[in-house]
Image 1 (cartoon, rainbow, N blue to C red):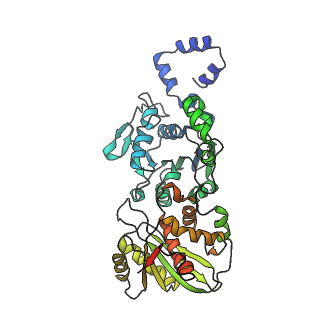
Image 2 (cartoon, one colour; image 1 turned 45 degrees about the horizontal axis):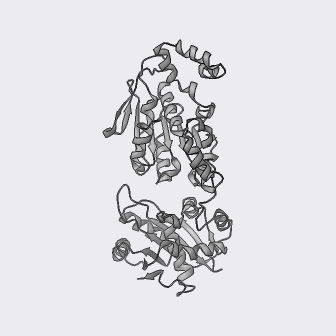
Image 3 (spheres, one colour; image 1 turned 30 degrees about the horizontal axis):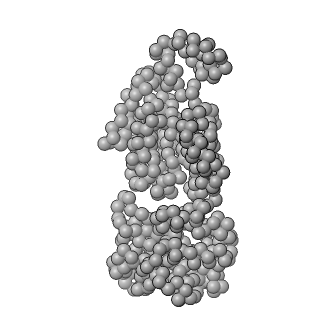
Length: 443
């Protein structure tokens, strides 16, 4: 039945109807579930010796169907342990598995292994977060909100959906890749609309990555006319449309206080002078569980040239005891003179946590009394004036800088908050104590 759809397309409608009517019910079902007959060329995995197939495409391209059908083909070819990773647990369930283009929708009772042995439609067990085929192959669901769940399991196949929307992108990606170690040639398929993220750029630059690009318009035949006339027409040519529809990787978010150009200037090679002062700033997470935000820990200094220098980013998701120990360790390593910590969620508790590791360390607790945008704006202005440098590459912090849109209602990122507190202590509080009256107070 190979290329039947392609051959039918060139026939008159009467001939097409006659050929289709001549098919038996079994042949019609086989044709219906033969993905390679229906797929566009860019929805089929490329040939070659690749480890990662990166599908960068706009909304409505057919990314979910592409990923689900790829997993189905891999299982039919002998894959036994599959990881399905989505931004959230509900995304993994509702989109990757139970969605109208998800795994359960593309598989059917007549599926067979490449050897011809019956495979059938898999069984989904939501309580166990897994999909199981008759031959014992298992696909397990994971959420990028819980990267630690990927510590331990091994896989030969991985489908990573909407990677650019993962909350703990670097942690989840690293844990997933450590587990991609079964079989002779384990592979991963990433289906995502892009964002300007360091991890995504690293994946794109890898020699083992095959990249497929696509736009919303590639799938116009299967999209609602109202979507094309209202949504596509509204956003076509705009910055958001170029990212969400055309899958362009934009350099920064439209309303961000920092631009890539500013970051490039800050990150340009520059001799780091002796420091007048060095501080370690902490933006503590408010909870301590698997869904907690990261605790921002950033070290910065003010050089003898009166420039600000970001020296290190040790941010991560940690318990209070762990982030205090890390901050103290960085304080000692850099011979800092003070730790600055945000205390809006319990200032004395933050001070006590740090002093439980080392009671001799000077700690300044700062309290925000205005919005995060108001605190960040003078620091962004210092970047715009070329007065801040990065002593080392800080890709995750820099991603937060160029992607945070304060007017959009997005939560202020942890690494960025810590950097703002550090540079405020060094460059704003010390240089002009009254310049930001009401923005914060020190305790």
